[in-house]
Image (tube, rainbow, N blue to C red; front, top):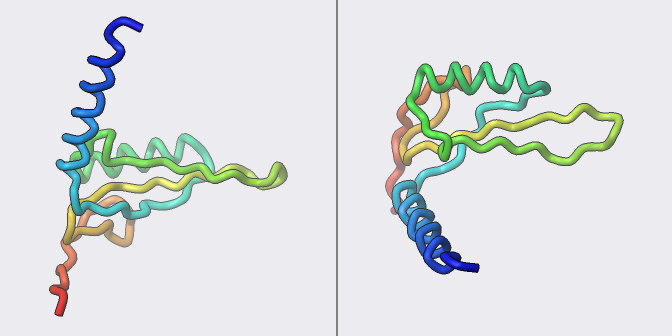
Amino acid sequence: MPGRRKRKRRQDEERGRRVDAYAGWQWHSAGWFADRASLVAHVRLLSAHHPLDEQQLRIDTPCTRTDAPARSRLQVLLPPGSALGPDGTTVVAVPVQEAP
């Protein structure tokens, strides 16, 4: 397929830049949501308090049994030394403990 090698190389370089930009960051759970509307509302509220790009958000929807409603978990990628507050929308500083 023409141009495939060049496109794959460009995608790999972009992926490498993203990995380097977020080195040391960790995923923090922002909560579980039963429906899409509440999930979108929480993402908007979180974005209003803290500027995020789409690569800092992850939505997981684990497989469930047919009688149980599907639920989605929202996770946010945050830099070292920060965490989500108790309300799940604000980012707070956490003291980093040094290794002995």
